[in-house]
Length: 294
Image 1: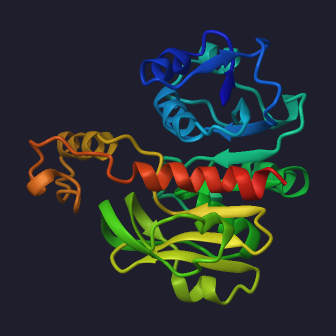
Image 2 (image 1 turned 180 degrees about the vertical axis):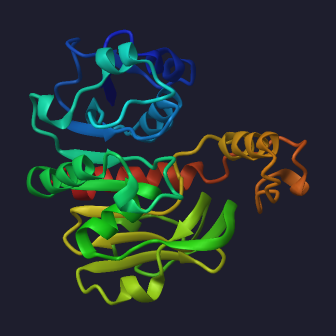
């Protein structure tokens, strides 16, 4: 497998340090493998960190994966320089190759109503474009809620307190392609204040609820045709991402609860482990094999 990335992208060296090989766009790739063009619409504040998290999960032996980093034009990032975005990112209209699969990340706009988000109109245009032109779209966390709202009219709901930690989930539809080789019970990290309600999703005949958690609620939902996969958790997170968020909130004086089932012995002084990594790799591999490569 070869990840095909833009020259000088910082994620290349970071991935290489982990033993994940990446080639620069234009270099020779393994011709015996099919090449999939994957768009990554990165809405997260820390672009580089999110790039590495997502690209790590696309490390699969059966494809060459050419990555197209995508941005919106209706919002200026406060955390990423314009030069970085100009160098490495394009709008979906500027991509000159057919996109096979699209990943849309979460975003730090959870307390806003969807209509209050500056780039919502543009995001909806991108989702409409993907519905027509892309084989399958994978929506993460807030993007999953925005996607369900746009396509099916179901709104998110505010929870009493932030859901933070690593939670056990049950696969309800074991025969679903996206659930192939996933453990019947699997661990997934969550970090959010809002949720989608099971009862409301159940009323949409076009959707299948794949996986749920007693503590974290609905986790994985798919359209029956596989063109849209919605994941409420952050399976892409590094081992210490939730730790960083926890101490950030402490510093802000928010007084957050200790993330559940995350720190060893529930002790924030101890280093957490990415016990969800096997699940995450299999999940994205299933998406690529069964929904994108068709």
